Image (cartoon, rainbow, N blue to C red):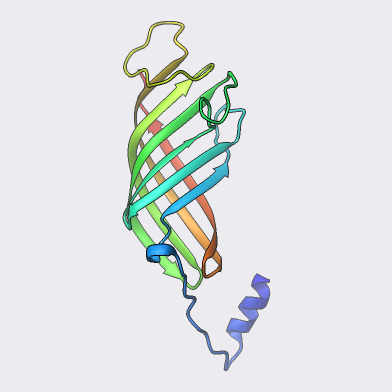
Length: 160
């Protein structure tokens, strides 16, 4: 399909019309994503991201331990505020680059309520600490109100 579109663009006399998106408030407000992370997590990763402002979003990603399921096992979850550093649009695609600050929690068994901040005793099952991240997000609009999103991020956390 992309080759057919590229061929159509290359033909002389083809009139291009701009792709007009129709999001609520003129931009995406809430995204629910699923995927995987490069850790020993056995469950799929679920991310929820809300953007109260065009340049600011709040994101959480994890496997839902303690909320969606009570299975014991390794989990890593982050809660992050992200600021958009770059935004580009072309036809039916967008690209955004973000920097983020937040909190990351790791656990080795069943989730417990709250966060165990600071140095933990030997044998503790969870710990949490501050984190930083950078991410790139691309959107491909299939229709003016529907898009597919890909989000890749890299981060580091200090968990004593």
